[in-house]
Amino acid sequence: MSSPEQFNGQEKAEIKAPSAERRVEKLPNNPESKPELSPRDTEARAEKARNEALEKAVSVEAGGKEKAEKHTDTPRRRGPISKKQREQSFSQTMHHVQNELNAPSRTFSKVIHNKYIEKTSEIVGGSIARPNAILAGAFMAFLLTLIIYVIAKTFGYNLSGFETIGAFIIGWILGVVYDYLKILFVGKKY
Image (cartoon, rainbow, N blue to C red; front, side):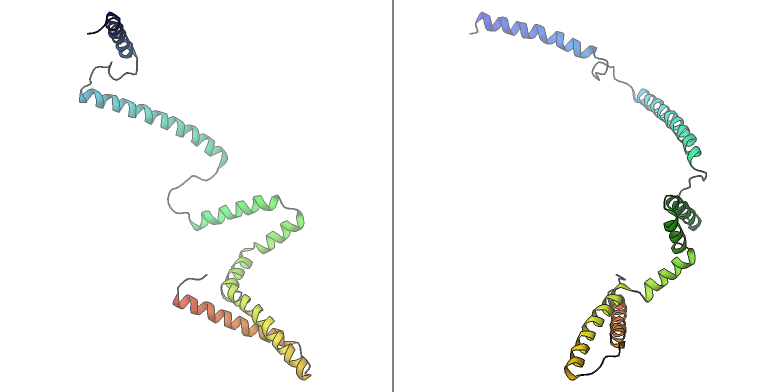
């Protein structure tokens, strides 16, 4: 059967096991060592934990408000940003950035970031100075001017200088037509 040495080893393992279980039961965070709580006790502990968390959150929020009041003059509000807030933020950012520029750059920045100049630039950029129109105008100016120049040299005609401008205008018109047809059929601006 079993030898006395094996039996002796099993006894030692049985003796060690209960003492290990006792140590585990004595651990403070061991869920097995705590008695089962009734649902009412569990709810009471959960409520107590919620209250403590709310108190900590309020104290942290109050500390954060004190710091926020030192840095900003306007209160925070929820919801979409209004036009007035966007303009105020833009002017603060521009003021901060312009203060870091040298004098000529600051003056140039103030001129080009003038409200009326920016609106005019947006309108021109959306209608006359469209990227496809300018690209098509430049390409046509190069191509048609090259063709006209070769023909003029071959047959001995003099060029007036308007050829490049006229070719650019033709290309620009083709580019604008292409943009508007693309918007009409595809529905995307760029």
